[in-house]
Length: 435
View 1: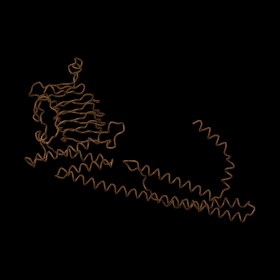
View 2 (view 1 turned 180 degrees about the vertical axis):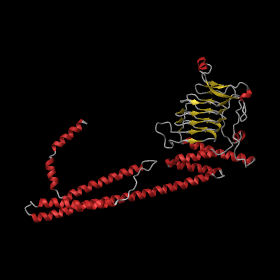
View 3 (view 1 turned 90 degrees about the vertical axis):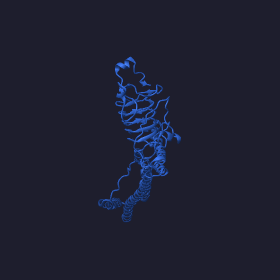
């Protein structure tokens, strides 16, 4: 920096500024106007390029300034500017011409120069009007392109949603993948499309029976030993069919739902690197209240708000290493299989009130306070079924088998309670596991 200042100082001393001023003053006025015109054109080009660069940046909100109607006083000001500049130049030049050796010729040159100044000023005003007209034309073109894009998006969105309502599973799959592509190419519509997919998963559905799903090669949770996990299958579903048709329809619908779950989870994983991958959808919230989810895998996903209240988890439910920046609600959720929460990060409240855990449970290394008050755990399990609860929580067995039974589900259930300070000191609850 010091070297630059020294160089500027030496250059400033080297230039003969009075001589340069006399040389510039002695040039014809047309040369000055030419230089000013070139500078103005360069400024307009630079501003236009910067404006286009800002438009090319991905922005969810249109920050272009609104178009203002030209006022009458602007036109009057332009006319007054041209006339005033011409009058000022004529007055000044005629005054200077009075002391010339040939006053008559000097006055003629003075008027000619004054008219040239007026014409140059008028040309500058005309250039500004032409630039404004070009700007308005570009704005109109941009608005037309935006309208065409929005119409195209609306058409694709409407068609995809109509496909989701089809009674044929391949058509519904096509609608899901069309919505996925639409969301990937249009970030401003991602949350809306995610809401549509979540709404589809919230529709009533009864998964196929265990025997049917095994026959079709679908994965089911690991059940160590001879432990029999109770079925928490919802009773709603497509009951208008019977026999093999109903089972086949449920298996087809299961494939559609697995595809919908895969679309959500695939785009909620930022990737192993610090910079998220291109397919990651940031800032997404999920509302899957009372949905039926089969083998839901949210491992290493990142979301904002997560609402899984009353969800029926059929099979595995994995949330290992997931990051939830907003509130996460699992109130009333029923985990018919294993539930994995190891390493999950909850930035907001994590509520599990009324949740029911039937299989293996792992809350190890959860980085947030978790509220399990009111949650239940099935205690008719094999001793090999290990459970790791959050620090400070354990299962309280009922006083009698009848006290731990409920009409809605089979088996004996215990409630999750906070471990008292006395029990923590005595070591009865460590390491917050049971099984």
